[in-house]
Image (cartoon, rainbow, N blue to C red):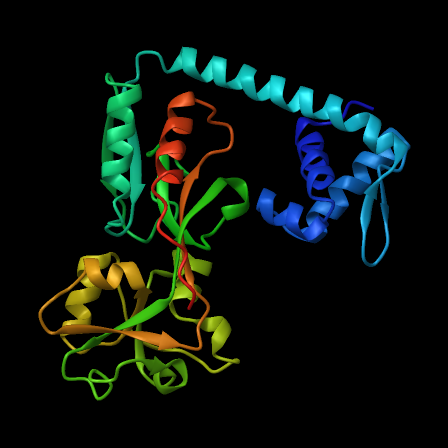
Length: 300
């Protein structure tokens, strides 16, 4: 059997983690999906690669023999793809970054500084994309990479690097009954009208409506908004409230709008996202810049 490079990549991650859950998180796929792919690889090779019980995962002798060769094949293929991508992009000196909200957090200056240092002929072009496209142009090739809030529809098809983890806050009209509170329990917001992203935003829309934390209680939709400017105008007009990340509460200060921390919610995550088949080394430079300038993780 000829193994797919994807299967070898999955095998390497599992062999290095010796934990299917951690390996799946590292690969941004589901744990059942990873287990299925490993089983298919074992069936195709007609060997058992891992010994598993309820508590531990260990490599078999066959798995230990495969690991260094699988690592080498994955590395060689990655290098080949980068070489091909770099050759094709030799004359394309514009890198387009898609965003749906202002990023702040020093990320854009950090990226521009790294490009100026390593690739002075390249420039960063930032494109604002409405929330109707939750991939900010990545899915249709309009952008080269994007800063996106997780989760988003089709996330498993992209390479994702989390750059900030922040508590969720709520933006309220300044005259709202809860506007003076130091922090607000999410239970106190359950009956409020919420501003919602377009339905095409899928799981991202659900995240900012906190659907998972409502225990089945339906959401009151006060309006559907296409972008951040529409959102905060609608809040100021009293059409509804909206959840947002703590960092964006500072970025989007507006007259007539206040933002307060919300308790009882999981945090929000901001990620740098690219297509997995785009191996240009310039994207690696951007990732390096972001890694050296990541916002500190904040507990909710």
